[in-house]
Length: 294
Image 1 (cartoon, rainbow, N blue to C red):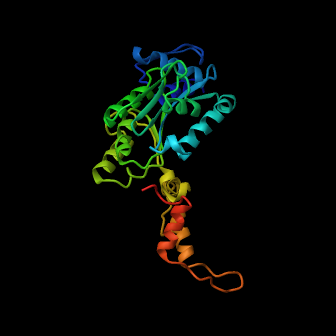
Image 2 (tube, rainbow, N blue to C red):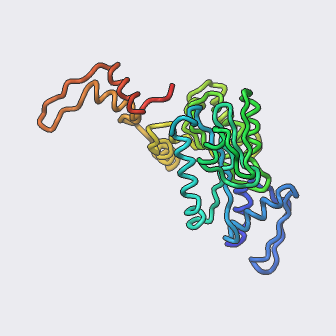
């Protein structure tokens, strides 16, 4: 009903409701929220009832080779830019890329605009930027990380997403802090979930909201099995009461390629091709872009 949608919108935007009142009509609902959350609450409710678009602020963290190559981060930025209008039309969602960070460099939008691939190219080439965009270079990683988070978060928007397209251990250490700030983290960086026990425990604590703050979601599917939805499928099976007795198969694209080259399967005519050396298969996988950057 109307009340359910109303309060769901406030809850999903991480807004505490202090008091509630309802009149005779189901459309006559009042709620008291903290003054600092008033603008965000209004926008959340408007978006829920399709009275305005839902704004989603996005931050991209890309690898250091951004300026000279294509890369996952750059391709993602182009895709978000290309699909922005379609997302508005189909889902009433305005996806705004408000900050992009590479190694030692940060570009952010001050006026709520969205950064394009062209904007980043101009920034790294030292060209004049469009009004509202700011560029900073710094050798201090903590300072840059803090500036990135500040540029992403806005008291007027309750939906924030970080895409981590790196393989950086330093960036993975920022994941718990983002989650605690109610930021959804979509990561291709597996150095967090496969890192130190201390970092994994910090991620678990942040993901479960043990700090008392409604956390963001931690979406790490892309780290496992070549982006196949393995983790979600396993969790759904277990949550529905099923027990998993065993899993068979190769869930790594690179490992699958290597094993098939070292020990090829038989052909249709029954003959078995000759395999190649393990070292040759690994080099081949690296040349094909199947392996981690490190």
